[in-house]
Amino acid sequence: MSKPIALTNITIYQEDTRNKVKKAYVDGFEEPLTFGVHGGVKEFYGVNPEVQYPSTLDHLVAAAGG
Image (tube, rainbow, N blue to C red; front, side):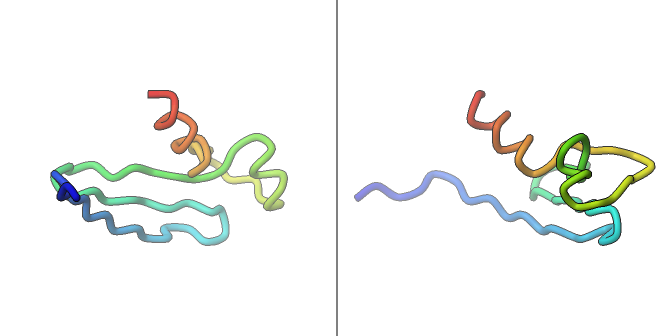
């Protein structure tokens, strides 16, 4: 069986629980990824954040498409 060629260390912090904002810090990168809600996702959670961010699902769909 082959060995993994790289491991990723990611730390996630919940920045604003009321508006569902999270930041993911990936080792080797200075800027975090910011996750939040928008559109139907914010309606589902019943929040109306001042700033809307892509959801975790948006990032997964983008990664699968890339």
